[in-house]
Length: 433
Image (cartoon, rainbow, N blue to C red; front, side, top):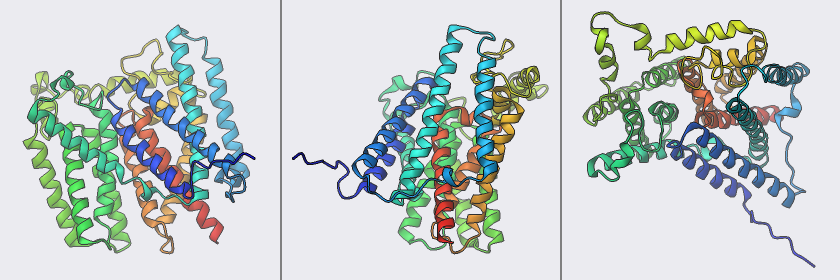
């Protein structure tokens, strides 16, 4: 008689948490490739997780796994989801032959495949979180730790010149093909450090560690010179501090120390500035450069955002109701440059139209509302997870108003795990009532 071997052992929870840690660590480090290669690699990581999930279910068929939230949606939500799927399928089919090229066929096909993989990953991740009681705080700390290691590696590379070949392009840094792409991740990691540093009950040693992580993460963010990242972090921090004031949890002494840490981070970023495009003075250099000395060029100051948004609005007017299909901006005849319109709302409108965008905004707003309600539930045993998940979503969303944050799979992965964490907490809360 053959004996079934359980590769998950007696602690499958630890197996999945370890994989999520490795996945988070690896996803941060693969940014040095082209965006398509990064998307493809992350899709492979997600597919492997899906395989692990179904292997676990096959080996543990008697496991008592609660149903995912998808099965407890209201009739309105189910109808909205169905309408969204139909709208995306319709706009894809109707725009398939418009400006058709072999490149467009390949890009759109992979876009749909990656989207399908992301959705399957969300389903499996939600099931794993629910059945094994996994929390966001079981693995999310690897985000700021990995970012700190990146910052230290940059210091080492510049100090020793090993390997200097990695500094071949002015707009890129090691482990990231574009400084903005890394800025997405560092924005979220810096916000996470702020949350942890402001925790009321925390040991002094852990508080010191989070202070170190915050300084290194924020210094890297400032060093990268991304104005959108700094604005997103500042706005998110203001929102979080407002929550602390409303709930009377803010410690003035801790806030003063946080301000001092911010000053230290700015000084470190300034001290380590080695390129013309980076550092805390990059904003002023962009204002005072070239023709801007005579008169400020708003479009240049916005890194051509105004030109991109103007062209995107014109493209949206071509088909405002159902959009131009996946990658509609990229393959529009009047395309300016770039892969996406550097604004998540315009990205959705130009691709999927007003109807689909409104449905997506409805689900987004509902998720954020659920998360906010969790923050004011003092009986919530996973309050910290809810805080982190919500602020990851908020910080990336604010960043997405001025950049293509959700076009790329690295920040999209963070959005996914934050969403799943919120839905897991909500599901557990509903079941306990």
